[in-house]
Amino acid sequence: MIETLRDTSVLITGIAGFIGSHLCRRLLREEAKIHGLIEPQSNLWRIQDLADDVRLVDADLKNFGEVREAIKEIKPIKIYHLAAYVDVIRSYDVMEEMIDVNIKGTLNLLHALDGYSYDCFINTGTSEEYGDNTTPFHEDQIPKPVSPYSASKASTTMFCTMLYKTLGVPTITLRPFLCYGPKQESTMLIPSLITKTIQGQIFEMTTGEQTREFNYVDDVVDAYVRASIAPQAIGQVINVCNGNEYKVKEVAELVLKLMNSPLKPKFGALKRRPGETLHFYGDNTRARQILGWKPTISLEEGLKMTIDWFQQHYTGSGIMKPANDN
Image (cartoon, rainbow, N blue to C red):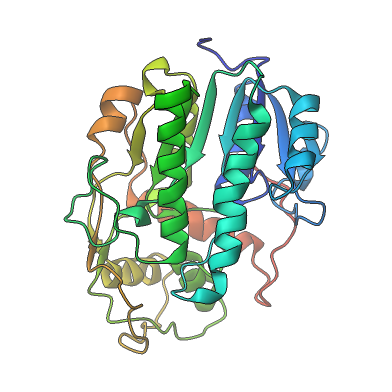
């Protein structure tokens, strides 16, 4: 196992996504040779300024033949698998897509890699796999998914663990907890609140009494990098979390305070999702022990950087300006 990523051939699926794009920039600083697996019609606005630094290969994870050809071309040593269909709705309507993309897509990628010499496959799980378990969530708890999305992720986690145990496939599953930062979709809690405030609109939300932890994207990316060069991480499921519990209400109020906004959120305007857990935060002991990882960016510091980015790049019409910054 190499201890540096310099000149290492790496593959990132979901490279144009929120975490994937930040991971891409971090790996460029590590001087890795980066390949991105993308669908032909992917929106590349987050990485469009990196066209000369990253090699993008068209392939649909649902199509085994396309994925196999891409792997034959790339021959990656390390794979960071972040691509997924994400929708936390509780409905039958999304189940087929969850199975096709998240479960079959992951297995297609692993199958396509069979026969190639690679030392690390990082599968991206989710903290939502824990469902209504007792907090703080730890990796030895039995998953209790509460949505098709979390059920699909729990399935891929089990497949990856099984493949490691039975076939020696070098899988690692990271479970990022709630993540935020620049370039996140404005439908998520923190960017949605920021963009609504920029527009001078009142933000409608639940009572906000439920607690969550909030992890800045650079901290999450650091866990991915550390996991990919840690031999002891192979075969493990690892939480990526800071364990700091905040009421959602308090975080919303802090965002408005940092933006010097006179607006107040409309608490109680929305109902909580069915099956939504009241307390949601994790135990990061395993990440600290195995990866030597710990979060370094405080909530207030991370929110300030996130607010600053959105204030510079949000047009007010719901359209992001092209990304040309780091």
